[in-house]
Length: 247
Image (tube, rainbow, N blue to C red; front, side, top):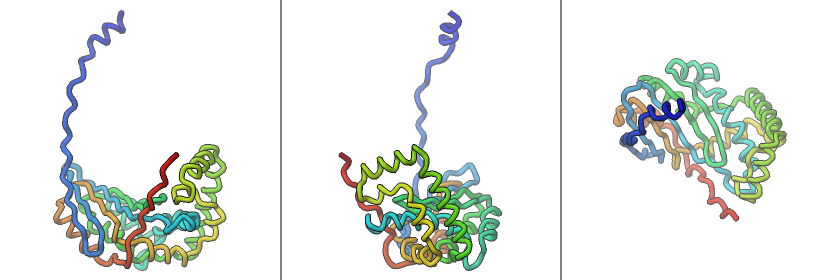
């Protein structure tokens, strides 16, 4: 009886309130980069996401491409021509930011949260990573060995084994079939290969930069245009080919 009384005291749910979708201000820069700024005033923070299509050129190269990409996503933060790894981290932290870089069969993704007033300096660090990452050989070797060990451990887990088998069954020779690279291929990665991969695949054309936060769209777009003006390159970032029809 008490449970029935308690339920009777609970008011009925009201109608869900509509949440307005903020306007997105879109610009295509001369470099080919697509810039999207979504103003959300009220909290002095900005979410930054840079998506670079990063698929293997074809299925035959997917295993090697994935091995190199798994190392590049960490090694790109090891230093630039202007700052070493510690200097890059300190510059970001001084504006409340900490850059993360991840990769999957579709994309290379740079992401961070930062204080709104630090947008231009953080964009400057991002520009350094995009145009002047050095991939120092000794640091790359340490990153490569760490990634290979982590992958070897992961590939021994039942869930990963099942997921890998399912992906191979579903996608065949498509790049999606390579869930985790072979640790031996990872251990073959060298700094020159990463520099070449960066030069050939980290391209503005086809990439998208999204900024959401307490921003003026015109000022934010102008800051991106000025700061990333040096990020250029021939060609278009590599989109993933269509996945096969599942049976």
